[in-house]
Length: 66
Image (cartoon, rainbow, N blue to C red; front, side, top):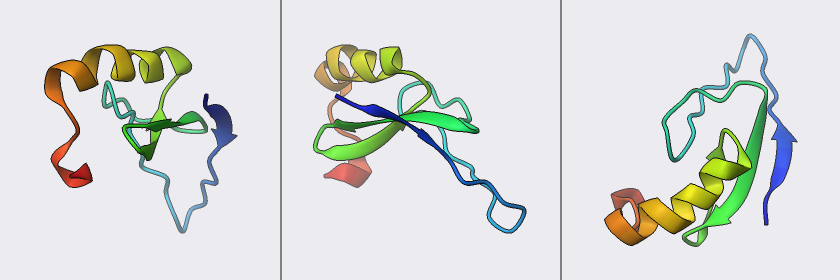
């Protein structure tokens, strides 16, 4: 189960984070969930569910996580 979080964006530290599933830039609020053993950022809870049910069974964990 994940949770909504607000990102801290300042002019000194721009927040450039993308959704782990679709690659969309996620400004402001993001969905944080434990997926494949790591905290991952998603643009919404539906993408977190699709990541677990669709992406991981077909493609496995990303190289950086291994």
